[in-house]
Length: 498
Image (tube, rainbow, N blue to C red; front, side, top):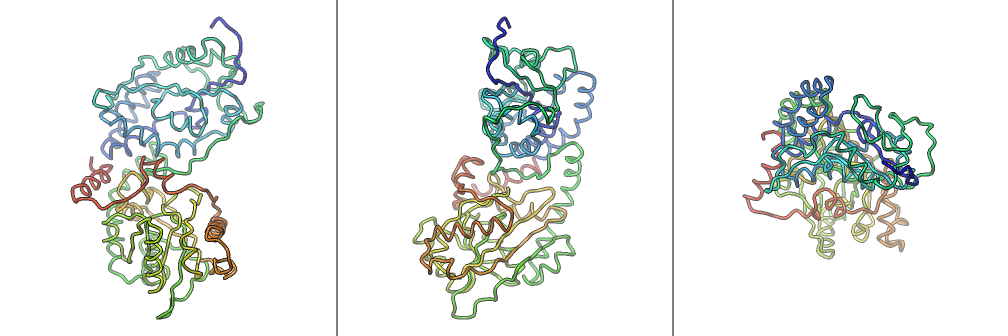
């Protein structure tokens, strides 16, 4: 580098061990193996961890990295790797962010992230959430059929990163470099930077005002709740056989017992229901029922609501699989997204008794509420807001990329699932459309009070926003042939049998 001119407020930061607290990327490759391929690849990569760790200790960092990349990605479709990088990994990256390093990174005008991981696994998160301008990483070799070979283009990863940073700043040097101290004789990108700050970045580091904000992860997919570090991954692997048996037993017992008995018997099987507030009495014959307006966390929501009320409450849904409708212990009615038709469906069911509706139209795992559809507010004044939330330890009970009919199984595979149901007071007439309020004002009000009850944040995102981010479609579930349904089943249970 002949020029010593400094780019104003430019930064080059290492991802592993700097922007991310975790110095080793092994757990992220475990996520890729499980979510993109299946349990066999996940198990193989876990069993190879001692060899991978030994190679690191002996100084063969390139060999260690190439081995883990090969096992995690070989024979995967490039589109599947990109899908996991888009929908699954950002949540785990975000949970591992070092805020001190981010403050230094976000205060610069030009931001570059370097990583030893494949660029495709990092780029979406770095650009969308860290607001990076460029991402430099390893490049997986893709064959002409669109499958990953498992090999990378770089022979010496550190040298390749050094050259890429040098080429990016060939006229001017970056002002700030964030990274781990050099532990070997190899030259790193830090030597190209005017100022070098070694991780962990001190909390009192002199930071200018932030040029960009760290964007939260609102939508994410994948079945694993915890980052699969070697110890956690082994625990999950050992639990899966017991979890499947436990889920089958729980579902069988639940299908045999009356709804009112479930909350009592569930304690025996380590399932906990937390109920707050006072639910309304059942609608009397001939009178219009109450409309329970609920937050939507999993496909189990209407079933859990019926459990805690001790009676079957029909539910209307925007999209649910055919198998879920068949297996559901309560009546479900599919909405068409044609406003007039949907209004008639809801009115008809309300005339028969109580009904539950989910104005968000889809689930959201994070502490955010999606925009509420105002249709419910136009149809009745008997509105009871219900705040629903759940906690699990190993497996998420929702999916955008997989088959939703398996959501209850994954929920009941958790060692100790917890569901919280909070009944709020029925809306006063003054807060409904009968007092002259618009349906949108009523819907926004209900969204706000439910968010306040749960400690969540209101958003204007919709179900279409969620599915475009996670699955690349609008989330419509259509009736399909038996062959299509079978293919979807195989794709969903692949993490356990492939």
